[in-house]
Image (cartoon, rainbow, N blue to C red; front, side, top):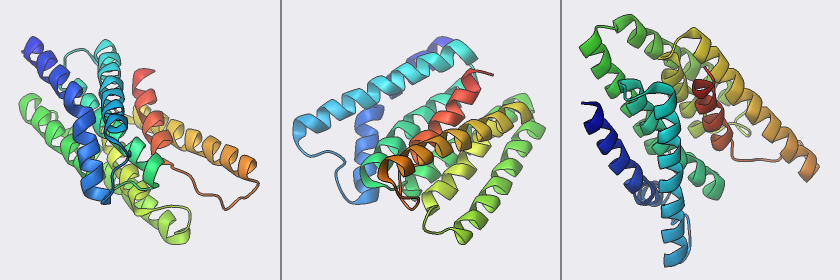
Length: 213
């Protein structure tokens, strides 16, 4: 079972780059990169990043169902990060695909292992985080987009699966890293109203928290 899982994840990681570029184009209505060779190079780089992240997750989690979720989040995360950097958008369908994949994989794991409290906690944490992020968006619509709000909920579900410690550490890392990026952007642009892509820092902080657990 473990070897089959490794082969499946390895294959999926290699095709993640082209798949994410296609998904980004479909959801944003524009190509992230201009020119055929630039697109090819971007797809290769995205696949390489997904493979590297999957390998790191395997070292930390082993060939377990949690590793499958890690790989799914990494693959979608790479696509979302590049899309946010290039288009300043976190497409809702891609964020929902990330969250939906987590729900399906976590539900399957709970079904096999009977770990329903763990699944329930992850879902409840995601709903609470999404609700709080929605309130923040209502109060500061110029600084927080719908994609950021949805991503908070999706990442909270992912982190919640690993327990309270990982959840709190992940939210701290993600929010702290985003705050640092915001400060750097504000200082460099000499404007407190500057906008920036928050997706990469949110994703990076969340994933880092699982690795250092």
